[in-house]
Image (tube, rainbow, N blue to C red; front, top):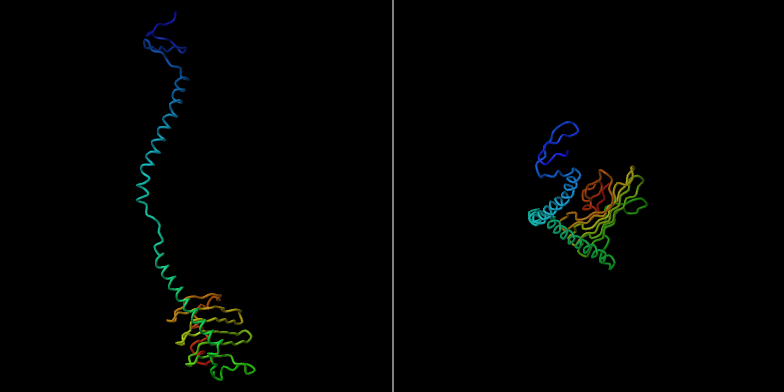
Length: 220
């Protein structure tokens, strides 16, 4: 005889389990399908809510995040402009010296006897303008394991503005550079190569004195 609603039912293990009247027990497989079916819908709602919150908060976050700007851009730009202007002035002074040399506006000046090299070939040559201001200096000393050369362009005030210089010793090349100076004697540009330990400015390089050279005095 089958038990009626509300009666106790004994399972295979002998344990009595009462079933409520009028209540149908849903199989386990059906409950699993219901939960699995409702889970994607719940995940979809959560994802939509999260996306909405992100869209709402993005403008506020962007407004408060510091913008990375190149703060030194203005000083660097100003410095570059000043450097470019100084180099333009150097090029103008150098071109003027070359023009004077081509047109015969420069005259060779006498140098000291110590500037005489082998076979009476002078180590130093100096050219001055009509006012007697040295404008072009060429110095070249070529000896084995000890050579040095210098070419300097000076403005109308006798200030070095453009120079090329090189030197070598028993260890090889020491430096080979081209340097530009502004009217105040500050270096504005340099290109070339230097051996470590030979980082001095050409104005203070050992064995090289542009100020003495322009006056016709050689240094050994």
